[in-house]
Length: 432
Image (cartoon, rainbow, N blue to C red; front, side, top):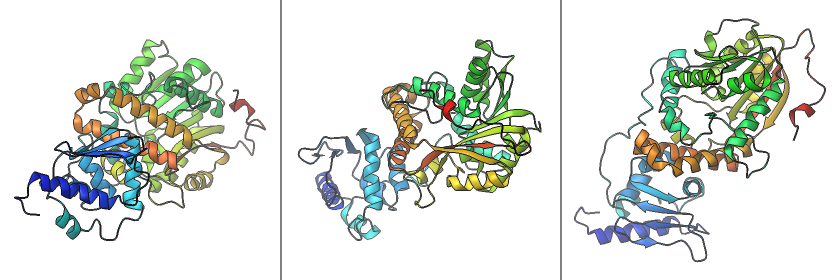
């Protein structure tokens, strides 16, 4: 379109494009507001779940070229459009646009150039402030630090705005869907401890321990000697301060290190990996399981808690954005892959539990908490980072709701001359 085109013509062109794009989408339960205040309301009789706000005449071109979900996500985090209301519902719209069968040629470059105003050039899309260019061999210790540490070091105060008081940044465990996140995270910690069948005097190693919620809980309530490992200095500092405040420094600690660097063969009765395997990578799975096997005493138990992709599914919804702006170098693998490698490393598989619905609930709690304290979150970080986290939490909640991806807890045992040392049933796991 000519650069002299009037703003009114840009408005009409944008509305016409959207009406054509979404002609077959019913029910359409969202509205659109343009930069000049013009509105396209939700379909009659439908609630307005969210309002898509186009910030300038070039917003739609910025959103849809090149035509992929990552483009649209980057247009949001760069401020070309906003989402007022239910951002999780916005992902349903993206799924329709990119996987629902749009009119042929609708998002081809010539069609966009003909129909829509040009967008302002800003060069290469920038990475999130907490994600840098990665160097070195994938999943080497040094590159893992580059990939992981910046995300978890955004700001302890930032995470404290929307996590529970123990700063547990993994899937909670809900007995009923209306429970609060504080209760559900305590239940998850207890669920993990019961699955590990912790007993006083045992030694527990938590690989990728985050802010130390599990080691502190296990030491306080199960009487174990607990060690947590993280590669993030901000997490270790926060965790050890909480441990000292609880008067448990003689019973648990969090130390800096990579899971590959621990040298205590047979030094532990139990090993937990809660939310670590996503960062390990398929090529390093044998190393991870061999290390866990060597660290355990005969009869020892490993619990692995990890997000997975289903073997039959395409790439989970929203993951191109998450891989680029949230968790670079992370890999989601089918649960059968980790089970196979664990078994080949010498373990016996004792239990596999899918907790997918629990993570959808968890992520919604986190998202609501972040949005409720949006101004504080922006002040502690910046607008760009707030938008990255808002979109990632919403994408993840939507994905777990529809089963792309999923999450499992798997329990492995290192047999002692053929003996597992475990009870015949799981009844002790479910006291409720």
